[in-house]
Image 1 (cartoon, rainbow over the protein chains, first blue to last red):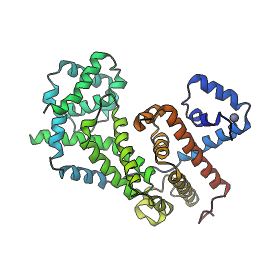
Image 2 (image 1 turned 180 degrees about the horizontal axis):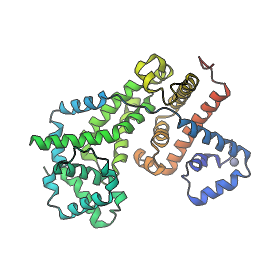
Image 3 (image 1 turned 120 degrees about the vertical axis):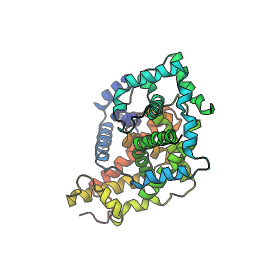
Image 4 (image 1 turned 180 degrees about the vertical axis):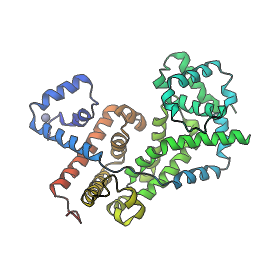
Length: 159
Length: 191
Ligand SMILES: [Zn+2]
């Protein structure tokens, strides 16, 4: 089992190899029984792992976390309010545009929002969370857009 | 004011609702113990809130979250608190809540339920024998379906290092599963 292709076999199974290397491994598998056996072993294990039951945390976890945040020296929602204060976000036209873009392009993710999040303020807060998460997917990769996204970070000290 | 606060609370709760199952799953596979996984999940979300200022918009949120989660779990392991935790995985039938929730879709078929518990046991044992970083990389890859590139970002490692971690871990787990199927594992209750 000292074949030097062996160390790439898991990445091969996971389809994580660059195309050129993938082709090399594929060609090698045709000639090396040891690697073929290891590949089979790995594929079988990955398939069996999918059979494991999911771990579901108890419903108490949520209540416990929110209670612990409430017990922090500064109420957590006061800090969070400073962190994502809508009033600070609104004056930035670029940011508003970016949020708008995220709202348009990131539509499917946002459709999953609970219905009670209808209040505009709440939607804006969540949109900001979403923007941070989705800007790569949305394709905000030019300098202006990135600057807008970076300004989100600065809002934390803007209280 | 109260209304805004309520809105903030809902925003954070929404974040929690969206991601806590992933974090809990990660913690569970990392420490191998359901109660500790829930404690860790709580700790991680409290930490996430406290470390909000460290969030860099260059990282995707899930990457940031898993970095917080991984660091927290790695620190816990370093402190030695969870060294013996995996033993509890070997007796899921002794844990009422565990027995119910871990039963899975085949819970109504005793033979398959047994096979599932045996699989759970050998995977837990294999994970326990991995290094903490191997376990973290393996867990993110196999149970969260994260790409090597994203795992590298979480672990602040190169993709090539992550490839090695995941390979060693997967191979170790694969050999345990193979032993189980070959009947070579000295299981207590193999039929
Ligand atoms: Zn070979």
